[in-house]
Length: 204
Image 1: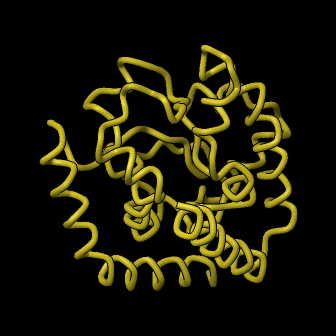
Image 2: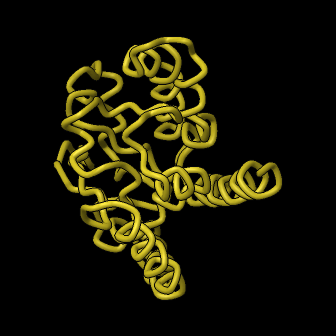
Image 3: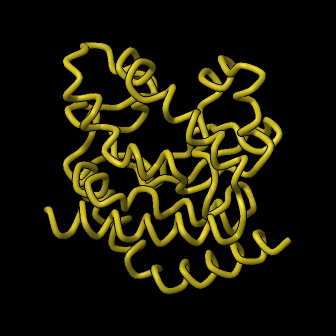
């Protein structure tokens, strides 16, 4: 109950304060390429329930029909504005709407597409017992996922994801399930803000 109250309160305040930024991002996306402002892909949530995630669209319309769910920084489906909002993780901000609606939490395992969830082992299915989140330990570890895939030298981004990211990502998500608490959530949130400032602002 405390976690949901915290999520609802924080997401409500953030959505109000960030509304001018949301409007600016939306206008930039519409001026840059045709298609909707938001990408509404299906993800698997708590207890296996399917929901549609809100992400500011950073790729061409119907990108999922052109390529797979894993994306490298060199992916040609990414738009000009998309490269900028992905660099500063602005495309993820709109998931505050999912947090407000109760589909997601501020902190929790990142939601996956069904085709990846269908491959979970019985142990890995433990991550479905909690609401997925905007950030977690795995998000901090793989904050540059697109760069890792692009620099892997593998032609298939799906292969790079499965070999270089997925195993450790699931291990960290299971770690979160074991250790979760309000204090752990606060630590992850502060670590995420610090990581974004260090890697996206100072080093840009």
